[in-house]
Length: 154
Image: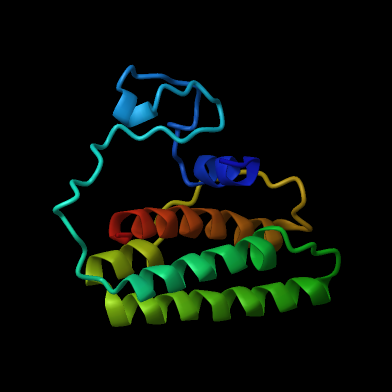
């Protein structure tokens, strides 16, 4: 896991992004890496396959990857650049929502679209408060997308 994923996890409130080794080789794979995500949920059994088309899961993965460059790592130094980022972010969000509506359960849709409380995590490269808000919300959405992708990947 790279540092930006670690930041996304922390921003999403995942406090499991700490050095741990629970001793379960299947769970932690014996790693004690501070940037590793640690999740004590049991792995999905191989006979529990998702009914979601893999193409939809792959499309979400592509959108997530695109957003890392275009939202999270996109430099913003002016109000005009912030307006472009805000517009792009809204369009990206709508594209993700469309895939979720067409292929996933209502629960998965709501999990992605209704963020609830967003942690006040600081992004050092944030241009201003509005940019920081976009980054914080994206970090929560990215974490949720990663969870959805993991649950439905075959």
